[in-house]
Length: 408
Image (tube, rainbow, N blue to C red; front, top):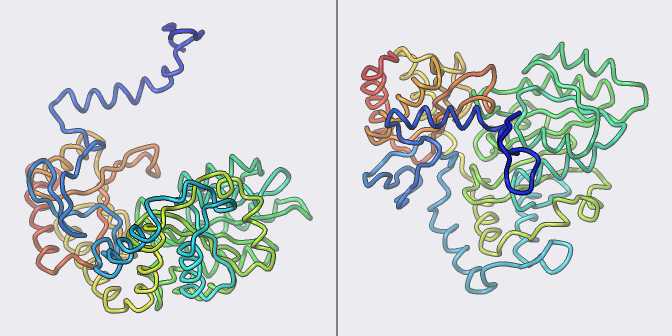
């Protein structure tokens, strides 16, 4: 530990971050633009923004269905802002439930055809709240090791026994379930689409095994809602296990196009969660304009088959095009709207990220510890509003930047 001391402390509480501070300073010392501090000066559409004074194609926003500028969605938000003001200034269990919150939950129940829906202020809070509340001391959580940070934090907050297994390894999951003591509460946590590489979980097999051992199942569908499945209900729908899972967690900040989180369930006792789930009870509820946009967007996503089809076309074309150019991708086949390009190291990744930005293309630079197996990734996420022409332009940008940086 560092010998440096801060005012009134016995040591520097920031010393634990010295390695990451040095890494960041090393990147910036070479004149590299900070890839984690980009400012969008003006957003023009779901696929375009002004960054560093120039028009830039957005390929890293998770705006999968392009709902952020949908006229009906925007109008609903404006109307709610006029009718109900800017915020609730209270928790859902006190003064923070407006008519719009109930309508948003109605839209979710209808979308998933489930009995219960609970809206949280963010997707992170949805995982944090549901997991920490249903699995506590003495219970066991069996989860994929590549699970999102919000899932891990929910596990830690609930103080359950956490038993991870190798990513998407069905046998490893079953081995862990076999070892759980008889009579203990069991929760299996999976994701439909894993956000770093864009790969899918084998939910059909995994859910069947979880049920065989009497476990409840929670599936996070943040990156598949609205897009995957005949009605956009996610991988659970595509794999035919919608009725077998106990909880589906999702977010409004991806396909829905705003901010917020939710859980839907058919469990007969689910409504008690509104009184016992701390991240729901002890935080202010979403502003009326946000839930109005979310409800409108969710209802439109029910009938967005054409947009889903176009997004699949975009995703498959980009995946194939980058593979043909010689880039190494996170999946052999296109499985979702996330296309992850694997970089040799962080320096090369940052260089290609900057070269693409200068071309007029924004993608996400993802680095350890957020990424699996210490990989550095340039993560692309397609949007249903990307035109055929834009996808062609994107491939040209990748080719030029890839050659200029020596990646291909």
